[in-house]
Length: 501
Ligand SMILES: [Zn+2]
Image 1 (cartoon, protein in one colour):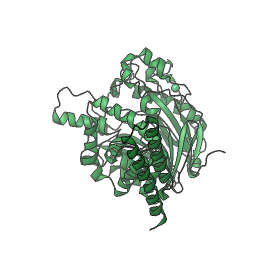
Image 2 (tube, protein in one colour; image 1 turned 45 degrees about the vertical axis):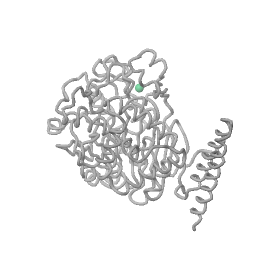
Image 3 (cartoon, helix red, strand yellow; image 1 turned 180 degrees about the vertical axis):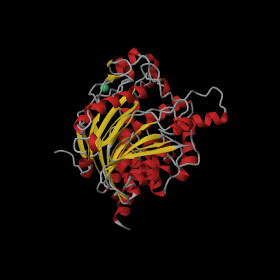
Image 4 (cartoon, protein in one colour; image 1 turned 90 degrees about the vertical axis):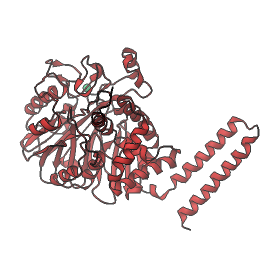
């Protein structure tokens, strides 16, 4: 018997002993507090046993600037176990908020998503990521006694692709009567620049994440991942999800990755590979723009279809991979800027994958922000650096109304302030969503595995749930999940970082 097995066996005896005492006591008129104490003892024994699990070796967690930083290392099972264990409270909380949203918008029950995860997604997930997802479940259960299983965690990992890509495709295929009018999301404002556009001639990349405040306020994890195979990763992310998912990340071979989502994208391939698994794999294994593109195209299922903005700090080259399902296009340059605000531009992608998108409507959120990126980036050609990039992420210039405002037209989105909402994404008037956090980095920082990140609106503004819900009772269903989203400071994070003393 090795040490860990002996320790686990000893702990099991403690747990069983506790349970036996509790069981013996339950026939007698034992007080509720005695039972509570016994439950707490069992929970403490479980936590103690879990904390001694050798899979936690090397893992750590600390909080700074409103972010939760976790360092994960080792083989896939260990990465997952550490993730599940260290972020257990946040995973339970994030799962509740996200699953409620998925069920609310689609009018499907949770079992529907579990089945899709189990039958459609799981068989095509690489063994490495299956082990990591299973590890999350084990770490989570060891820490909190969670009831979540791997089907729950896989469906949860696919929260950007199942409700808004798979379900509309399925509704159409089944000609479902009274199906909700689902729209694919439009997440984010971002750019990547290089050459004569930047202050030092090297790559600068920046991104703010647009989503519901309900989910976005929970999108506060910095993952520092040292996997057994592949490159080291530093990325922002969501508790319980193995990809960055919003997306912003760098790897130790110098690849820089972000994206914005294609508005009004339609399509799904049930035989493809889950987007979250491809995106994670690409960040972990791609050392070049070509390798990144190859991994994303392999088994493309159309889920969470994005305009990927890429940089390779080794060559100074940047690229845009507009990844439709029926069509895709790759642009690349060593001297230029590529921006995104949720619009596709390749005629073939527009025609075949986003046919409803109106590229000429200057009033829409994607196009108003596109116009602002154009003028803001041109104004600053040759001066772009990380300090300027983080200011751009908080920009409130509305090109549609030609004034300073904070709404759906601005790079820093505040749709809760807009009577128009964003109809292209199905966001009604005053929808509680917009830019929920921002990140930036450059080639030098990437070489040293560093990023800047701000939790909350990149402009520094706060969202307060209580007055919002009082003013907008139509969003009352979100009340159990919608929380204040207060902005933190711009904070630097780096791989291998330890908590400040
Ligand atoms: Zn703002």
